[in-house]
Image (tube, rainbow, N blue to C red):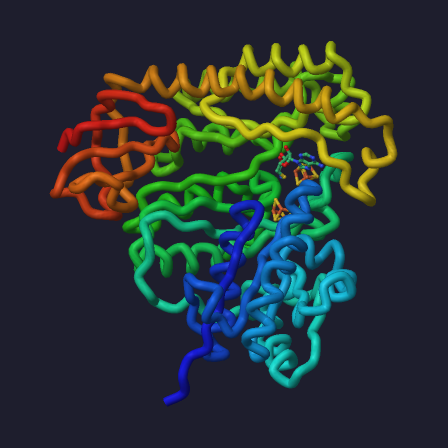
Length: 441
Ligand code: SAH
Ligand code: SF4
Ligand code: F3S
């Protein structure tokens, strides 16, 4: 019997990278690799990278530097760089860090087995094409191994929006939607393996328009309704959405589709019309607020989440105040906020930059407000009854941890609960990052 080779994957960046890492592990499974949780005994280390901000990209080079010792100790160790840094920098990575054997962009993962074989011959391998074929169909079928209750499923990839700050349209390419039937097949397969909640992923997931089995173009809402009929699947979520693609049928699904959860990540980036225009977001703050109002009218308990950038080129204190005002108006259940980071090759990189000190100051003020909102909304859950999908044991004996319908982390004491159980829970207290509850049924 051949001894399996060990694969260690380190994942950076967004949820799509998490999904891609799973699929890459499966693709290399066909080459005799099994995943290991320790890089020390690995035969291949893959860094699945993110290019969204300068810090994210630089992390990759410091991590590669740290791997030098391992490579010297084990000449058979192969080191690969995948993901968005691979796409953006390509062969430059090998020039800057010669210990790298393999560079593969996000659209070429299905070619990993050939690329790996090349490295075993002592050559380097590079593939950053945007090939015609559908990588998902070329990848090995997902093995039938059991898995946790929550999973990601990529349905759409790429972006045609070209926000002036963002590298994604360059690293992931233009928008492509996977056909409906293939998504449904993958979803049924995940359910067979123990999955109860699926988060549909796309860089612009609500711009999804995939070919349906009836030959028609299906919207994301229609896809969600089809998933709603998959037996054994309990919950559906989707991320990330763009405000301009928040169609009526999707808002309606949030009202009447039983498995679709009342949580929406809807980034706005800024509350200033001047900045939104310069960002090329193609909507105003007012349009975003009206959309939120429609969503909340349709589904009053909807929890909203957002992304913000502070210190975008030419952002003034007044622009920043407009962002704070928008945040006040929306009341976010959770949010992510970042200092603008200059990305070479994007339009905003050429413009007048805001000072680092100013960015740091605005980020602190924005995060203070967002944290305050988040805590207040979380505290308001105390006394309410919610559905919780349990995922794993907690730190205390007898404790189980799961996610509420609204994405809060919730823990209960109870030996009768197992991962994968969806139970009604009464929330009894709220602490910094989680809620404590009591089982109701
Ligand atoms: N497709 C999604 C998100 C893509 S990237 C969307 O349209 O919202 C995730 C987040 O990273 C963005 O929402 C934005 O807030 C942040 N981001 C992207 N580029 C950035 C940059 N150059 N500097 C700082 N933050 C950035
Ligand atoms: Fe980037 Fe904008 Fe596309 Fe989102 S919509 S991925 S922020 S270009
Ligand atoms: Fe990063 Fe690429 Fe995702 S740049 S955020 S890993 S799409």
